[in-house]
Amino acid sequence: MASVRPCAAVLLLAAAAVLVVAVGAQQLSPGSPILRDPNVIPIDMTPGSSPTVASCYNQSNSGSGPDCTIAPRACPRGCRDMCYVHCPSCKLVCLCELTGAECYDPRFVGGDGNKFLFHGRKDADFCLLSDANLHINAHFIGKRNAASARDFTWVQALGIRFGSHRLYLGVRRTVRWDAAVNRLVITFDGAPVELEAAPAASWSPASAPALSVFRTGPANGVVVRLDGRFRIVANAVPVTEEDSRIHGYGLTPDDSLAHLNVAFKFYSISADVHGVLGQTYRPDYVSAGVDVGAKIPVMGGAGKYVVSNIFATDCEVARFAGEGGALASPVGMVDEPTDALCGSGKGSAGLVCKK
Image (cartoon, rainbow, N blue to C red; front, side):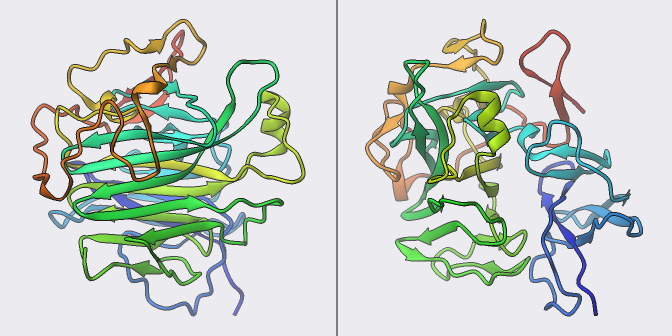
């Protein structure tokens, strides 16, 4: 029996149900095992194939939403890597346009729906989010920019602290990129996380059963969930020759500068949350540290967010209380528009989100 080319669907657990379906080039045999995660659903998007119906539902209350008839078609213009079906709008959207996204060199979409750049510096670690019970750092790789005082940088890995646990999600350095070869590295409390090379392969540790990791394809894509705390959709991608040509990265044959494109969803963060991305969810957040005159605003003040290593909580804006940190109350938290579509507004460098 011939194999088909599917997508992976990821349920965004929020007050309004949102289903995202990744348009990729992963292979799944019809004889594959039954999916172990109801939030990861293979959809055939092979050009010329019959339209597929994707059902939107809210797992938290077993309610149902509208069905989206998904016809195979190209991603929206501007999607560099992959796109998703957004329910209940049933529209294709780019992962890197979702609220809470971090992509490329690196560009963020904040909790307030606005996009900005944060360059940091290569071979250093920075605090993306710090709250009483959750701390997320990012390791930056980079390349010298001869035309500027700053480096070109990309996020190569995440170091996530919750309670007494440490979760690492990173991308191995690779010379020549091959999308069929898995470059993701995941460890939990120092031990490697072993995931079968198949869509919907899953893993959850006995010491933290609320944590789960699922593949969205055989290689280079995962969803990481901590029930009640966060969901992370992460893809390992290279810097393309086209991007290098356009932006002058100076890509060389000895390093594809493989990095992470990530979309975060947070469920329980406090009004005191901080960090490069975290502060944009504060109800009192204003873009004081952002150069609003730039084509894409640039967040400065990197020194406030630097940490001594990928799991350190010693940044100036740290809020992490460690194992004793109580579950944060969402009271006062900015309402993240997961059921909104974000796009560039006319005359605006930021993103405009429409419900």
